[in-house]
Image 1 (cartoon, rainbow, N blue to C red):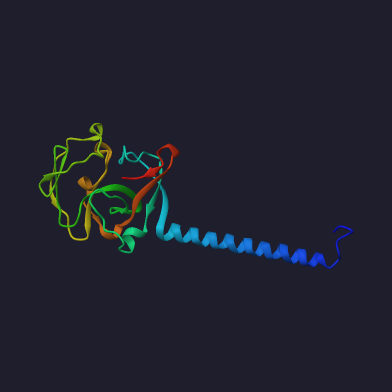
Image 2: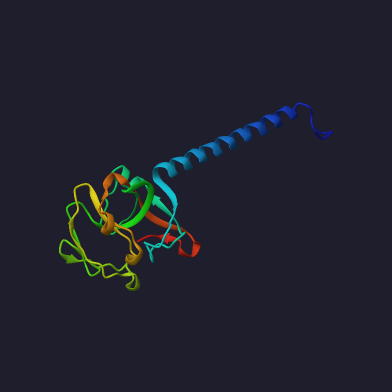
Length: 188
């Protein structure tokens, strides 16, 4: 307090500082609640582990998945979507793969060429050096299930090996790479 300042202004200053701190604390708490809601229900950051989705996604990249789009029926799972799901043989593990077959589709792989309902699939996301020559007999995708494959076919553990993914195991759609910064952008 300065000599010119009246004694009565000190409690007013203290009250003003306390009120400012309370507003700041309120805004901080509201921000934390909004962040938790976004992470729990809308977008979740995840780390890619492995090379099965190269070249679209590389080992150790960080991405955001949209958990909202499939959970509440605001979007249907479509051919070509990159989805994150609980591995059907060990639900404690998460996998990320591309959707190749929808319920009712027939998927066949002839010497590495994927056929959807008898027609070869154009797969620009599979690099030539990552293609394999595997043949897998035709499989009809059951109701409420999806046939998934990695883009790096020679190193992907996918539906060709262990079958389809039940709908309720799929919990998100990969939408955005955020790390490393030079690869930041929307996934296609």
